[in-house]
Length: 601
Image 1 (cartoon, rainbow, N blue to C red):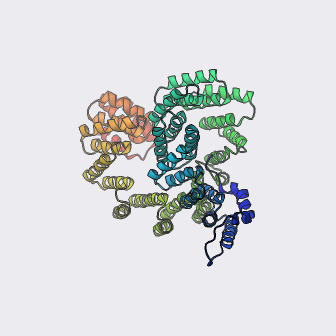
Image 2: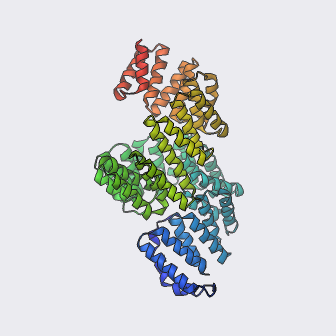
Image 3: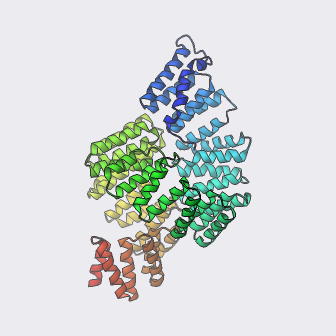
C-alpha cells in the first residue's frame, strides 16, 4: 500500500540521523551568517527528538528544513514519504518539489506531488503531475497501475476518480486504467461506471481473471445478478485459484446465497487450513447471520495478519459493543490506528466514554490524543471534539477549536470541510431545541464564509421547511437543482416537497424520475416515486414502489404511505394490519399516528 504508518519508518529515520555526516557532505554553502552543516545537524536531531515524543508533525517539519538545506535528494525523498504517511500535504509538496529540483530524473517525485495536490484540492495541477509521471515512465501501463494504487487509499474519492479518469482518457488502451477506475467507482457507488470500465478492461485484456470477476460483480450490482453469478461461477470453475474462488464466495455472500457461500468457504478452509482470507470471509458471513461468537472467534484468528489487523479489531469492537461489553469494545477500538475504520473506531470510543461511562472530558482527551499521535486523522478528531462540545453546550469552544487550526493552516481544504460540518451540527442542535433564529444565524455565518456551499444551502432549505416556509424552501431547492442537476438527493428533496406539501404533483414526477434514474436502489427516492404516483391516482404502481421501498428500508413514514395506498385501493384489512403492526414498533411515529387518526374519522 502507498499509505503506511509513520512509526514503520523509524529505522529509516534513525539511519538518516546516524548518517548525518554523509548527508552533510552534500550541503551547499549558504554564506557566513549560518553554518549549514550545523543547521542540518540540528534539524535532524530535533526531528529525531520530536519523533521520540510522537510529535510527528514537528518531526516532519524539521526534516523539511533539513532537506531544504541539504543537496542530497534522498533526504527530500524521505521527507516527502514521511509527509505522505502523516498526511502533511503542504510540507510534502515542498519536499517533493525539492526532490525534483535536486534530481530532475526522479520521476517518482511527480507521483508524490500529485498525491499531495489531490489532498490539497488542487486537482488541475494533480492531473498534470500524474500525467508527467506516466509520460516519464518506461511502461505507461505500469505507471497507470501505480498511480491508481497510490490514489486508492485517498479519502477524497471523487478527486481520485477525477485524476484516474484523466489518465484513462489519455491512455484509453491501458486495461489497468479502466480496471482501476472501475474499482474506484465501486467505492463511490457509481455502479454503471463499474460496469462500463470493467467491461472495457476485460475487452482489452480478455484473459485477466480479476477484470472479468469485477465485471461479474458489476452485473450483480446493476440488476443482472443471475448473469453475474453465472459468470463468476464459470470463472471459479475454469480458474480454480484460491483468490478466484474466494472472490466468488464474496459474490455469493453479497447476493444473499449464504448457504452456497458457506459450503464453498468450508471447502476452502478444509483444503487450506488457517487460510486467512477464507477465515475473514467466514467472519463476515457469521457476523451477518448474527452468530456473534463464531464471528468473534474468526476475527480473533485473523487479527495477527497485518493486512487485516485494524479491520479485525474494529469488528471485534463492534461485536463487544453489541454485547454491551463496553470496556472490551473500547480496548479493541483503540487498537484501530489505520484504514477505513480508524476514524469511526475512535469516535465510537469517544461515544462510549461520553454516553455510557459519563466521562465527556475523557472522550475529548481521547480524540485529542489520537489526533496528535496520528496527524492524518487530526481533522476528523477535531470535528469529533467539536460535536461533543456542542452537545455539552460549549459551542464557542467548538468554534474556537477549528478556528485556531484554520488560522495555522488556512489552505487546508479538509479543515474548511470540517468547519462547514461543525456549522451544520450547530444549526441542527439549534433546530432540535427549536432555536430557529439561532440556526438561521449559524447558517448565514457559514454562507458568508463559504458562499454557495451546497450543504449549507440545503440545510437552509430544510430549515425553511421546519419553520413552515414551504415556498421559500422550494425556491431554495429549485436553485440547488439548477446548479446541481445530477444530484439525486436535491432532486428527491424538491420532488417530495412539491408532491407532499405543495400539491404540485405534475412538476414533482419528472424530478423524481431523474432522481430514480441516478439512484435506482435508493429507498427514499423509491418511496417518493410511490408517493407522487399515489397523488396522481396511479395506485397499483404506487403500491409497487412503496412496498419495494419498505422492503429495502422499513421506515414508519413509508409504512404510513403504504397504509394510505391500501386504504385507497379498498384493501382496508391489509391497511389496518400494517398500521397496527407498525405502531407496535414505532408507537411515537407522527406519520403513523396521523394516518391512524385520519382513518378513524
